[in-house]
Amino acid sequence: MTEPVFPTEESTALVLEGPAGAIETIVEAAEADARPLVAVLCHPLPTEGGTMHNKVVTIAARALRESGAATVRFNFRGAGQSEGTFDNGDGEADDLRAVVAWVRRQRPDAKLWLAGFSFGAYVSLKVAAELAPDMLISIAPPAGRGWEFDAMAPPECPWLVIQGEADEIVDPSAVYAWLDGLKGLKNTPELVRMPDTSHFFHRRLMDLRGAVKNGVRPYLPAVATMPDD
Image 1 (tube, rainbow, N blue to C red):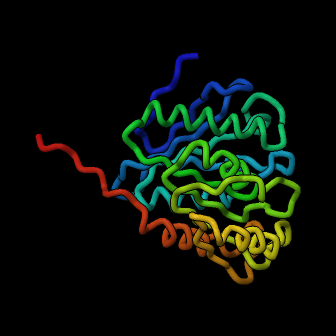
Image 2: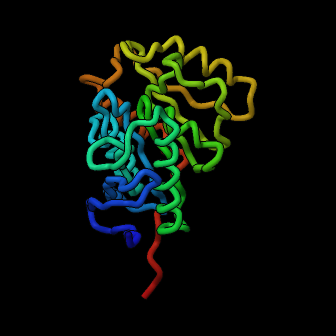
């Protein structure tokens, strides 16, 4: 497979080569003044119907594009048109590694941010110390749901965690306890608690959009400038 060039159009669907076969991908250009920044977003649990078209993922991507980032959404193995089968986070981490490697080859001068919702937050955190993104965004990270959060090294970059306080799938108290255990470490996240907010942010998606935009604003690189003619 010939490697696709990073597109500049408003929205482009493409296929990347991954360790389990094809990875279905959508790249979308910044909606505001473009910055040298690409954000890769990871979706929730595929076995529960999670895909890159999940509304929490798409609203987070929109918030990032409105902040000047290009966004890359993709389907983990076995979801949508991506090949392979569910691998409980291990193979999905390999999928993310492949997408990030493509982004870095195609946009070597851009900052790289990772973002994920629920299972996608787990996968992005799982590889964050290794991939060294310039920022990590974790939305409803599924601490207490069977994955080894305590064994994962936190990233050495700015880290935003957004958690609904009425989450019926991820226990907010488990998330807060996990984060409390990180307080003695070098890098701890900025936590945004959203009251009266369920796991899928029903009726609170615009509030989520604002939380993402406000949380990332201090870390945005300068707007890209065009050289003089």
